[in-house]
Every structure is written in C-alpha cells, then in structure tokens.
Length: 371
Image 1 (cartoon, rainbow, N blue to C red):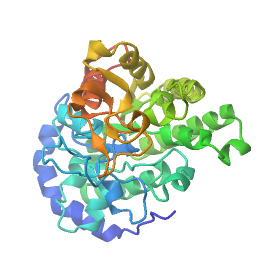
Image 2 (cartoon, helix red, strand yellow; image 1 turned 135 degrees about the vertical axis):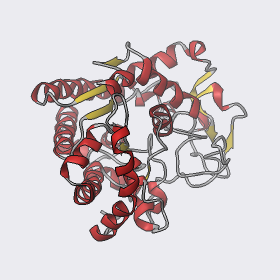
Image 3 (tube, rainbow, N blue to C red; image 1 turned 180 degrees about the vertical axis):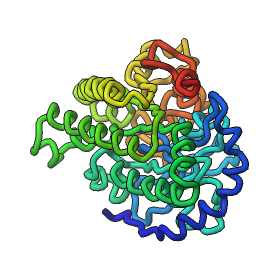
C-alpha cells in the first residue's frame, strides 16, 4: 500500500510513558459509572479528522478551501466538511477532545502525548473495509491497516500501564466504526474489475465477514463498547445522482447498501451473543438519510439533492476545490460536497445516535455509556 508508514514502537511507548502519570492520577475518577475514558475511531472520510493530510500521494484530501469555512478556525483541517464532522460531535457529547489523527502523533514529536490515552483517530478518507479502495484514491489507510496501528497503541498502553489498567481504560472507551461506502462505490464504478470477480451478494457478504474479523480482533485488544454505523443511502449522494439526466438516486447501489446493513446487523447480534462482555449501538444511517430526503423541512433542509460546494450539474461535476463555488447558507443543505454531509447534517446524525431509539439498536449511545 502506498500509505505504509513505519512507526517505532519505542517512540510510541515513550509518548505513552510521558503521559501515563496524568492517566494514573485520574485512574480513580475513570472508574466511576458512565465515565468514558477515551475514543478510538476507525473509518473513512465521514470521520477523518486529518490523517490523510500526512499521506503524500492520496487524492482523498480536504486540506484546502472551501473545506473548513465553518470550522472554528475558519480554515481547512483535513475534514471533508464545511466545519465539524461526526467524530467531533461524538467526542464533544462524550466530554472528550476530538481524537487526534494517528499519523499526526507519529510524525510530530511535539504532539501532545496525552492524545494516545484520551483518544486516537485512525480514520482515513477513501478507506474501505477492503484494501482495494486504495486503487480509487491512490492512497488511504484501509481498515486492516487502521487496526494494525491501533494494535501498536494497545501494546504501548499495556507495556506502560500494565495489562489490568490498560484493559480497564479500554473497557470504558468508545470505539466508533464508520466504513463501507467506498467499497460499494468501488464495486459499482464503471469498468470495475471487482465486479467481474464476484456477484454483489458475494461482495457484501465478504465485506460483512471482514468487519466481523475486525470486531473480534478489537475485542481481543480491549474494546468493549462500539458505535457501528451502517452504510447510508449512498446512491442518493450528488456523485450518484449526477450520473443520470433525471438526477434520481442510484437504486442499485442503495439496494446493496441495505443488503450489507442487513448482514452487518446479523453479525452484531451474533457478536453480542458470543461475547457477553461487549455492547454496541448500531446506527441505521440508511433510514435516516431517506428520512432527510423525504422530509427535508422537518430537519430544516431546503436542498437535499445538490452539493453545497462544487461546480456543474448538482455542483457535482467538479468537486469542492478552491475554484468551486459554495452556497451561502450551508445549514440549508444536506450535502456539503458530492459525497459528504454538511456540518449540520453530521450534527443531526450524532444527536440521533446519542438520544434516539427509532434508528439506533439495541441501545443509543447514552445507554451504551451507562452500561
């Protein structure tokens, strides 16, 4: 993979050692009920907070205007958004700082080493369940590699804190996983080699099986509380609508998104049945997207087809780059660019994940934190 980065385990242990005193001083507080100690984020551009800024040849970058126009600094940060994304909102609701990009810690020795204990983001724009999405974006950190990076963090925590303290810390941490859209985009892309090697059903079944392996691996490495987000109605993104004159959703992509989600929910139930010590919140992002599209005024949206930032038909012929134009009121739009939701939409998603019941099973995140 083009994004391979060698990290010295000794440097990692040094960083964790440097901040372990702070952790140990707070250890007693962290045992209180409902206290979340950290967040470790896995996923794609929906939750990437800047990892791809450190990938030299990746095409999936957002470290330029007009991204970040509504971020507190007013500048692009590597988030594929006009402002904050779901990872920021989840962290804020948990009372945590946003988990910092893993690659920023490894590349900058001046980075606050406490980040390794308060939370790390491994998410990467363009990432997929499979490594093959790298072919679409030249360079990203696929889910398997993200788990490899987390393994280094886990081993460092254990070496510095001891196994019992590290396991306790991680058992009270939250592990969001937001991934899968890029795999479907890659499969249904015109001329895709992947589609010649397997049927759509075989492909989504393989995706589900791969996520199952990841979940069990993360459990082996201390994870106990998961936020799992299903694939949204990605056939209704501007990138898919613009491919036909009538601007309707790509229902084939949507259909297989639902099939993947069905398989994922079955795996999660089996996961919980097998391991009683884990708990999870599954978010039905697909149904929420459909609700936004069918009932926009309920959520304050006036535009649910076109992107806010871009050029051409539905502002999706040219992506959100500095020469593109962007809408004056981003809160009116469901989509920021041809793939990603606006800051407002991301905030609404997270509100539902924490407080809802209709789209979150078997418990919302407030309940997940409390167990």
